[in-house]
Amino acid sequence: MATRLAALPSVDRLLNTQTLTLARQTHGQERVTAVVRAHLAALRVAAARDPDARLPGLDDLASAIDATLASSSKPSLRKVFNLTGTVLHTNFGRALLPDVAIAALAAVASDPCNLEFDLVSGNRGERDEHVEATICALTGAEAALVVNNNAAAVFLMLNTLALRRDVVVSRGELVEIGGQFRIPDIMTRAGAKLREVGTTNRTHARDYADAIGARTAMVLKVHASNYEIRGFVSSVAVEEVAHIARERDVLLGVDLGSGTLVDMRRWGLPYEPTVQATIAAGADVVTFSGDKLLGGPQCGIVAGRRDLVERMRRNPLKRALRVDKLIFAALEQVLRLYLDTERLPETLPTLRMLVRTPEEIGRVAQRVADELARRLPAEYAVEVVECSSQIGSGALPVDVLPSKGVQVRSVRARRERHREIKRLHDALRRLPTPVIGRIDNGAVVLDCRCVANADDLAAVLSHLENNL
Image (tube, rainbow, N blue to C red; front, side, top):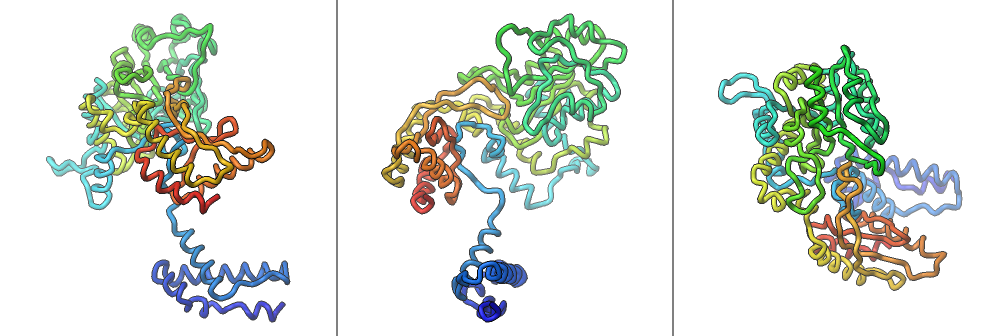
């Protein structure tokens, strides 16, 4: 054993190979040396466990170390092709930013900026001012602020306006969203006391009226954005709840979740309540996301009465939940796109993907299918099929969008099909730019709605033969 281990090259000999000499120029002496030592240590352990195991030669070992260095140096966050059929996919970062927002990000990232500096007075400024006026113009609100997501916005609203007091919520709106965010839990953490009314499927106006008492601070309406109850159901519209709240001198807060600033029916999409309509209906405070239907960066937006928003702005928690200059830079540009709604499908990537026609998507799907047919072995059958996309991220959960995709089936014997399909699914994920589809009814389905450039995807698929 000692003789075999003595045959391993020394650290210095490995470092002086041509491969690792070049690697040191890229990764640095300290990093390369650490990886060399780790590889040698692992070989010694492996040799102790299996005395007959073959030890690699000098060049092979240097190449393995170089591959480890290259792999560990890749960014953890990587571009992927989203062919799942879910446009706003939480696992893939939700909304894609428009070019103007990306340019604004780069501009403020590389230089100092006036994040909290008033260029007119020369005094300290307020970071929300960079977007507040535009939010108010778009929504009809008196004031607005921004925090890091909608959950934070709801938390800040409850902690500021209902601390140690009752908040009335319909049982049919006690939602749970991704990451086990539950309205009852967030209410408890915010220091408010939940007062449930109605039942899971039916809540009436009298339920709200009867529940409001001396300790009530707020009635909270929560948009059921990630599920839908059908059948024997009833709920109370925001307008009617607002009337009840005003009569009893309590606040009405509305959590819109995946909020939108434009009625999407104008482009043939299903209806989703807008922030403007909710405020016009009588809501005192509305919270909504910036990175879902709005199509911007991750953030939570609060819009509503000036006195209430100012109280929230003064809450010490606001500092803990605030966003940085990058979010404000991107959000400002996205909001400005809404000032020209006629061109919104052209300028906002999220809306552009949502309004794509099956015919347009079909042309992309055919290009992808042709490339897959060239690259896949004979045991796979490739065809363009009709499929259904969904908006995602809790928006319109039961509404689907007609789409086109590529279906790949295995033509092998039944007992081998599952293994072959899984092998293809995994191989797509290992491509230089991972391609993420879904397995549906024993086949790989690649919904092409979110493919911005079919040539780019085809170029990546050309590597598929090396990954199967």
